[in-house]
Image 1 (tube, rainbow, N blue to C red):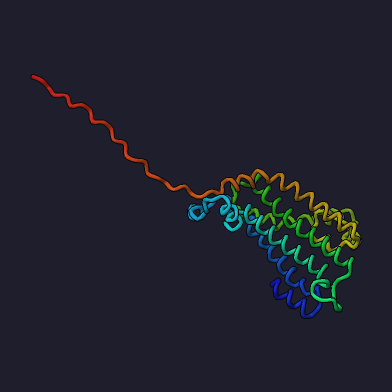
Image 2 (cartoon, rainbow, N blue to C red):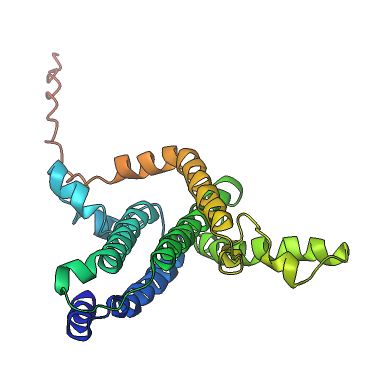
Length: 250
């Protein structure tokens, strides 16, 4: 998708043609986080048999096997590469592809895109890691699919509760919806001021840092448990000495 949109950008001299690939990738990868947090922490024997023993190969395999920990790292890597490639293309495509007229967004639009996209992606990881923490701390006896349900409910609940509060105070209006509501993913697209969008970015980054700290022990435990299944070696039989024969004498 990136190569197709890159070629399209080069032919049409329009850096904005990278956005269809970027937006589609952001949406699909964000949805995949719901599936990832619903994974089991314990790997089956069938999966563990395929884990490579060498440390370097095992570290690479950690990203491709079942489990929420490796899956979150894998999605974070893909989203980071996609965001970086899109941002660099929008900022530098006119100098890379051609010196002729090249359509792109204005400097303020580019900054707004970076801030809004960065805050949105950070909020996605915030919700996913918070859902994992809630499930592990309070519902660890329940199926892991419940963490995926929490990851879906958290954005809606965080967006709905402040508006319910404003409703009962009789202050719910379009102006109240356009005010900054930290933690509300949908509010990023409602605020107009760049400083308010920056507040969302800083809040999402702080929230993510807190969730990384609170989930740190769980992540390190998952990393330590990602070991190949030890082959069972049957111990050699133990041959006991025969008891001495006691002959009876008349």
